[in-house]
Image (tube, rainbow, N blue to C red; front, side, top):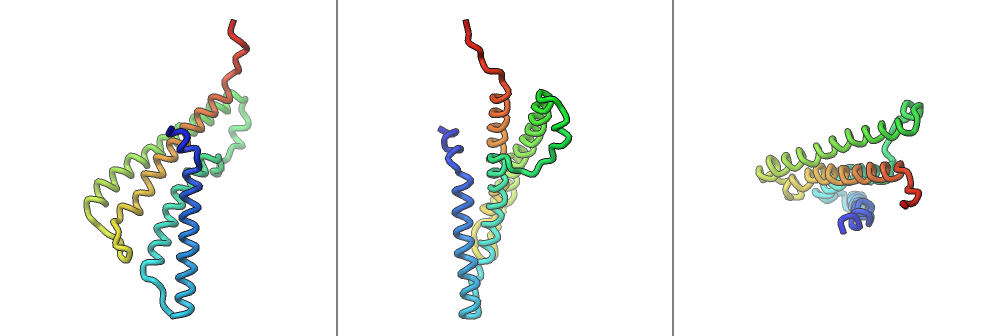
Length: 164
């Protein structure tokens, strides 16, 4: 069930929704500033928080689509088995970093930000909500990296030639 939910384009849906909201919000801000000389106090802050969420969720989507910037000139010089080992090693290190973001981000958000009761200046929402993007994105990235490792290993495994 979880595999199906994760494969159902969760990142694309979140990114599309936040982009639509941001475009409407920024357009309303510009239009109201032009027509009445004033804009919403909370509009800029909401746009900033939505953009922060977009960046972190977009990192997970880039992993899913294997579109992160990567320099592989060095790796291409090795035989295919060695390339697989280097790629898996890089993904494992990256997985460790994503897990670090998820765990330490959760500790930070709920240990410091949430318990402090700090709210945002104009939206008056708990600051833990914008900060929650970091641990959630770390968890999503970790899941996507495990999926990549699995697919990489599955593709490199020799096909069974029939069991007798």
